[in-house]
Image (cartoon, rainbow, N blue to C red; front, side, top):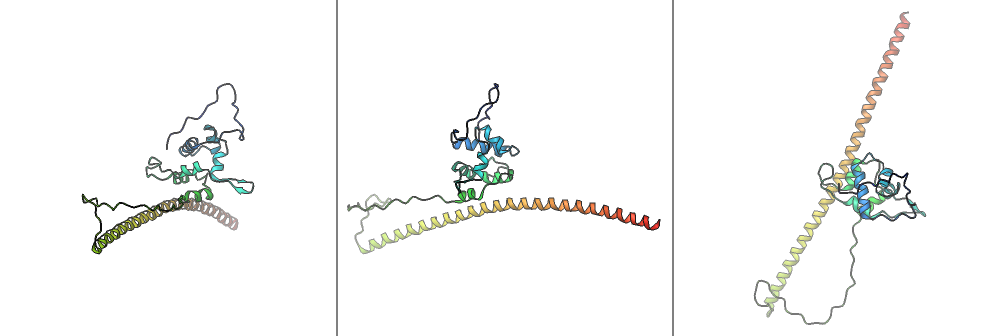
Length: 239
């Protein structure tokens, strides 16, 4: 589950005063990770109880899971919560190595993750593109062949064809590696989606089973009332 600091206990001189929300220092990655690790390990504890244990406001954890409106605009998801939900811990639950988000949805369905936070989880990182710089006019040394002790310098048209063939081989190898990486990424996304859908299906099946049991009890109760009514009618008719 990860380590987290022990809950703070006030000195025995009466109730401790907590700083106002306006004066409270913004919590960092370590405190937020510790609070959510504790909440995951203690699903019966309400978030309004867990937060103060780690010097976090009683409503902060719920607000991070479900960002509120501020001046008509939904607040930006907390980046530390997003990082925690992405974290994959091999010791979580059954040792399957699921992400904290999947584990959270399993053991704390009473505190769902807002769709806005889920979208932030699925957002792909931006790749910073550096501006192109002009290539200076310099003379390059001829490429050295690592398999030879000397330097290969094309001298004829046939030599140029050899260089072209080697360049095409390098290109084909790079394209094959890129294709394998793409297939692997798609497979990872498919497995992740399958695990998420499987959890939702198990929850739905459990709900259906519960409703079916309630329906059977109601049918049995109705049958008892019908039998009593029938017996009363028979006694009345024979009397």
